[in-house]
Image 1: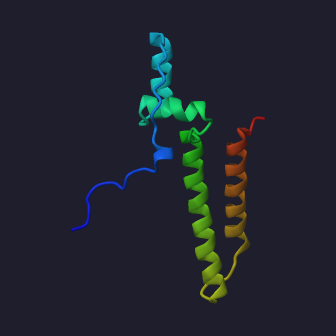
Image 2 (image 1 turned 180 degrees about the vertical axis):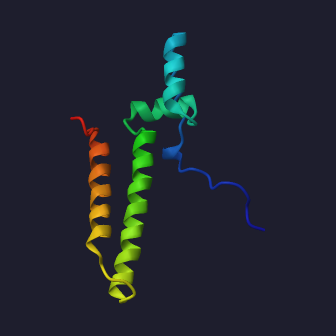
Amino acid sequence: MAGRGRKPKDPSDRRKHAVTCRLTDAEQSHIDQLRGKISRGEWIRRAALDQLPSIVPQANRDLYVALARSAANLNQYQRAINEGRVDAPAVDMAKLRDQVKALRRQLLGVTDES
């Protein structure tokens, strides 16, 4: 019968050294805010080794979703044009171009008043 559980780590990959440090309440609170769902020890290890995952702001995620939606619409529209099911009216393409320009401006943090 095959063994169950994880495969044993290579001895050179096993973590055997413990490091302890003391933090103020404010420092610990700050780390807890930054670490998200990652354990404190894992987050501190990654921070020390410069291996923290990149944090994408929610605003950028929302803009990415909007950009992906526009790109999907463009692909569907282009396919319909290629198959001869629709003509390519300039009005729709201009609207799409304006949407892409607006998204780019938002990603750069540029407002219409700027």
